[in-house]
Image (cartoon, rainbow, N blue to C red; front, side, top):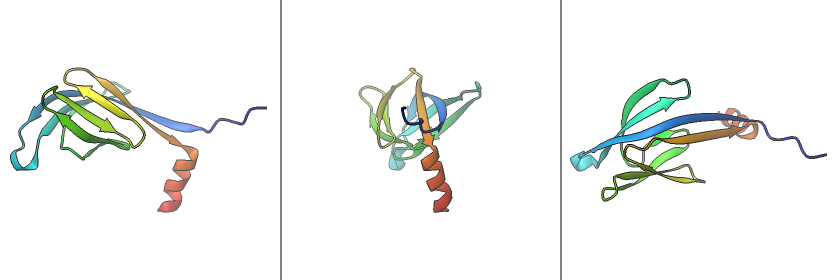
Length: 103
């Protein structure tokens, strides 16, 4: 008998890089369109190193290719300007329990 699968909660967010602003001393500012699974859209601005969604952080910017790289500690994803990408945040029951006990 195979072991029972670990139950997880999965959250998704579609991210589209709309543009990059010159933030001068603070570095580039990324204008993103965030689309929830229910279709709700919102525009937001982020800097390098900021958390985008769950564990996903904006880690790199390539001005030559107009891309940003996001990572969650396990995966890297390159997001091109105008090309929506889906970020998936998975939390297992074990992680959820750890989060509760850590508080």
